[in-house]
Image (cartoon, rainbow, N blue to C red; front, side):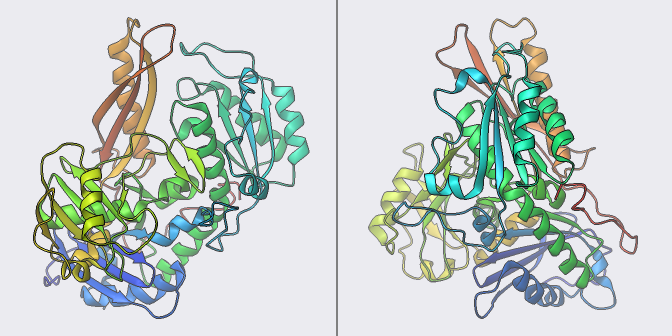
Length: 503
């Protein structure tokens, strides 16, 4: 462990919570890991309980807890597996999902803009028990856009206002999804204005174009899930900041692991909580590859008991993301997250054969790759495996593998993305591509990236089928280092004021 007495600040403190396992990592301004610690708590702590118990030992271990020097830490970053449970998970028999974290979900309403889309009504693909438990009402009114960005049909503001009056005082949030809203969000923004006027500022309005995805149904589902999660996420974010203040870290910027392997600021996470789902696993994949110095590798994510429920992958230094839809609580969504191949889909304890089969499924090419073990049970699993498995060049557990999630979240950039649909006949195609790159950069800044250093990183173009004219879906991604914290000692407002977030 490095002696920090000669350093002047700018540290990132990464904290990972996985059940009763706590890991911490301190990273300096150069991105070097200077201290790591792991600890097991007793009982079944909530995230708040674990933070209270873990922060002080982590700071003390890193030798920055005395004499007010917690001010040397200007960013605190969390990868918390329990945050997945803010989404309800289905029972193993596929029946009604059960709420697994006392987040306090309130009822929400769903609005679709596009009267011509009712062949598949809103929420038709949801498990009925889940839908009935969290969604009070839904409606479909005229509105939306065409592929070329023009208006599909006029927005029915009167119908929106009438619907709003039927749910007034009964819902905490409203999800709004418009046809091709990711291309032209004008109707969603206008609908939000109508709903805010009728419902007041305490009801959160969630818009689908901020989530992304070209498919209407999956984007709508993700938007409604986000509406369900936003009110408890805002409340939990405020409680977490109080915990940090109690540990002398009230000045620090706070970030969370995101499900694509990047991070996001707490104010953004509170209003976009669906991106938390799978964030801890994404941080583990990134951190394990970083600790091993591998750019192209497979990563087995381990539990404290030494089992590996899934395998992820890193390509060119970036976690590999899902290419299709992601199902959450039995609901198909447009969410993209770090791809994980289950080792034993039946939930049974993995063995070498099951692991080898999962390795084969996780690879996208026949080339053998390293298999790295990361997470709280990495060392236990490593003791049971040979140094090589079929499909791998080696099997190894890098140093500090148990703290991989803490290292991953502490070293990750802030990310943002933007989507557009581009007709290949468009004379301004190059301008559209530049525009989507800039929109991704702006999205990264909104998520907490340093405005001066956020840059577009990559762009994907996917051909679209069954359209009258050739077109591609553009997905641009941008990254940047997390924004600077308010200097220690300077008062700062609460990052997530409930009134401003409509809670």
